[in-house]
Structures are given as C-alpha cells and as structure tokens.
Image (cartoon, rainbow, N blue to C red; front, side):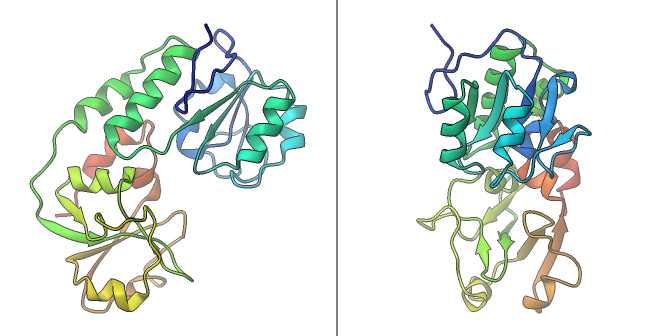
Length: 241
C-alpha cells in the first residue's frame, strides 16, 4: 500500500528520494539538503531556482527529473500539482497546520516516510514548544497591506504566539485570513501589533506608522511562520515581553 500525504492522497514515494524539488519555503530546510535539486526563489538553499511557490516554472521542475516534489495546499496551486502528477511525478501535499504540534507531526511523518530519519532539531522543537504560557497580551498580526490582511482563526503562526502567551485578537474570526480595514484593526485596541517581514516585508518605516500609540514588534517571518529547524530558536527569538 502506498503512503498517503496530509490530504490522504496516495503518493508513489521512492525509498530515500535523491532528486527532490521543494515548492514550500517553510519546508525546504527540513529536507536532507543532499536530496534537493530544485527550490523556489525564497528557499534558504543554494540550488536550482524554479520561481515562486504560487507560480513556479513547472517546465523547469519537470526538466529536473525529480522523484518527489513537496507542495502545500495553501501555498501551491492545485493545477500545478495536477500537471506534475499527470507527468508521472510523485507529489507530496502538506496541509495547512493550525497548531505547532500539527506542523511538527506533518514534518515527522514526511521525514519518516521518505528518509526514515528523526533529526535532532525535530525532537528539540517538539520539546521546546510543548509548553503554553498564560496570556499576557493580545495582538493583531498583519501579514499583508494594500489591502490589509491579518491572521485569523486556526493558523500556525497564531498558535506560535499563543504558546508564548500572546492571544490573537482575530482568533474568533470566521476567516483564517480576514481583510479588515486599518480602522477595524485599530478598534481592536490590541496590546501589540506583530509585523513579520514576510510574506509582506514590514519594516520600521512600513507598517508601524499605521498604528500610532500601539506597541509594534517587527519579527522574523521565518521564526513566526516556518515550521522547520528555525523552530528550535524561535521561542527565544519571539519572546518579546
């Protein structure tokens, strides 16, 4: 019986794949680096670039002859996944995790299935993020502007902050990524506005000026939204009490 990915789809994954293309930046540095032959423009690995995660150059991916392509249900387009599979490529689709434990469990299953490995960083991350701090602040977490987009319900980054004692002011919104006006965001009267540098590159001169009188924290998107080796240090990096 074939192993199944996070969406329950069977994947003819080879034993210890040696030609892997990652279309998910947050997964790339979780994969044995010697296996990677193609990555997106935003991945932290020096190998062949195949464009962005939303619009990769599928022809270039096919030309690399991968035995496995890693994708994500939110970051990658279904039509690209379908085209790769139609060309006989094994595609592993990861889900959009709502919590840190879900994300780490997804990575653990992928690594165990494909490479039969349990890296030290994974074990340490599971230990580091097990504890949930009492709430000491509420926050709004914009991830885009023009229009404004914020973290809503059931997001990995929201759970990262909650485990640090920071409650998401939009956690009860029906949308995972609401699009409130800046006036609506200000009306939340949150203690903090957390501004990551990706996917939108918020900076000291682009973002905080929209929220006068509210404490703004500029943070690394890699530590807030990626679920790989960076999680080991993310808890300490993001603890801005």
